[in-house]
Figure: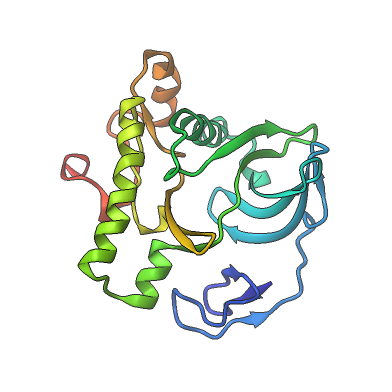
Amino acid sequence: MKQCLKCNRPFEDNSAFCPYDGQRLIFVQNKDDMIGRLIDNKYQIDKLIAKGGAGAVYRCTHVQLNVPVALKIMHSNSTSDVSTIERFRREAYAAMQIRHPNAIAVMDFGVTLDNLVYVVMEYLSGVTLRQRLKEQKFFSIKDAYEIIQQIAPATAIAHKRKIVHRDLKPENIFLHLDSEQEVVKVLDFGIAKFKEAIHNEVEGNITRKGFVVGTPHYMSPEQCY
């Protein structure tokens, strides 16, 4: 694994520079005690992919099927927070309801006996739209059009299922390389809003009236007001 000494973000071994601040990446010894662990007798953790505020994402191998998957594990200091656990669960629920080629595929959600909360997703290879923007700065009209034309169907299906993402931004759009073809994937439905009545009680605990969710630079005018 490589790491940026300025922002401390981890990266794949084949990366040379940090896309966020341009610093040269260095190899670091992996001290993550999750590496090598077997989760629920199914998912063997191979390496760390990324860390965020809510949890860490690992590349794993499904031991029965021998296929790579991505495993998102909630930080242990958040497992006592009911709202944070519910965000993890709703991310899995929303993605499984949408089931679209341009939305991240989620296969499993669970809590281990030692209280690890996890979501299992398809393993993606490529970069986020934010990373591509850092590298490229500007897109041609054709390239921008092709990206938008893949984001729109995924969000349209979500809206048809009465799910509103609420945090669409470059960090949550992934450019996945699939057999030399780039496929756009919408990620992270953790703060999605469900319009079905069965979620009203949970929704009240997650997003109270007057409580702002999302990323300010990418909010709709209505949300900002």
